[in-house]
Image (tube, rainbow, N blue to C red; front, side):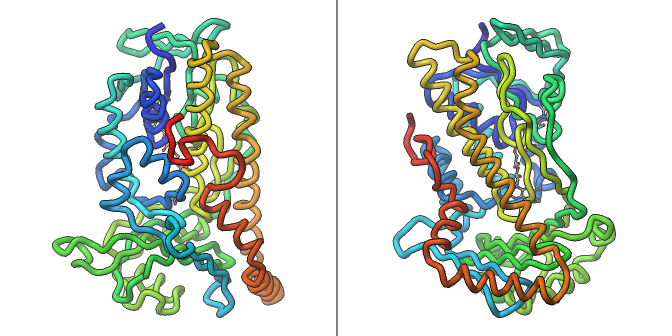
Length: 410
Ligand SMILES: Cc1cc2nc3c(=O)[nH]c(=O)nc-3n(C[C@H](O)[C@H](O)[C@H](O)COP(=O)(O)OP(=O)(O)OC[C@H]3O[C@@H](n4cnc5c(N)ncnc54)[C@H](O)[C@@H]3O)c2cc1C
């Protein structure tokens, strides 16, 4: 065998998994179709992600926490409202506790991961590469690349994203649907400081999220003013038009929906539109194959949980595989793969169902549904145990946590 695992896809999840395994001396060959240096250019992915506190602990345990401290913006509180109604649900990190999460540009996380993966002797990164075939049998997975290279390992892991060709070739079925809306993503500089508060304003056309970022660079766009990432869910039919709005028109549209929360708003990054959908693989494993991250599941970004679900897959997968290696088991044996699936399936199903339900609940137009929602928000606000439960879910702190999410190497 050429490595302990072959990882197909070196995106945020594939490279974090390679690193987590490397920290436990489990070797991997990571193959990606893209030149990964191009994925760290600002034009490739203008998104920022809310990294939940448990995921942040894992990144620190993997020695890439420095980027969270230098460029991440702690989320001290989350405020959920039905449009700009006065009733709201307010979650706040207790004094002296970890922040609820950390906002970080995906590009910066990719740079830190790529650097760490390249420095890890246990990881062989091959990108860009074209996969000709992945053949799996009872003993091994054999990967053949277009340049003639052939690699074998006892296990292949698909981390090749929501359109996973590996999942499709394995004949694993998906449950899924496309939402009738798309996410318009951009960045704004503003005159009123955000105070580390993330706001989620729900409108029948879709939620608008204002996510606190570190201040803009004094010499760059925004001129040192406070900055927030915007994820605005719009009807798919109007997304194309919204994309063509000039910066001033877009700033006016956003300002009209946030009721002066951020003061004067200026667009400081190009806007990008992301199609939105839900999918869940019927199974996470097949012969000598495991699915992780968006290859296994994809959800609406309403609660900023997609990447965090993938990070939780990484932590569980690393723990199961490292345990198998230490106890002399075959890392690709059905029992080992089943252990990972059983650990992760329930959490992923629950988060998928809750985010889908939230999206549908707030999409119902009309005064009566709005009144019911506002009553519900005010009710949850007055029930501390229920609020604490929601907060723990958002932070990724529920269920049996793998060691990495507790900030420990196994
Ligand atoms: C608008 C928006 C906002 C979001 N915000 C958040 C947030 O705040 N918090 C959060 O937790 N999540 C968020 N998410 C979700 C998050 O971005 C995804 O869940 C995450 O990026 C998935 O990572 P991944 O590595 O599994 O897949 P990808 O990022 O899709 O990576 C897949 C990798 O596989 C490679 N690849 C593809 N096909 C092949 C192949 N055939 N062979 C080899 N390699 C291949 C690709 O080149 C890529 O590098 C958001 C999503 C959207 C759309």
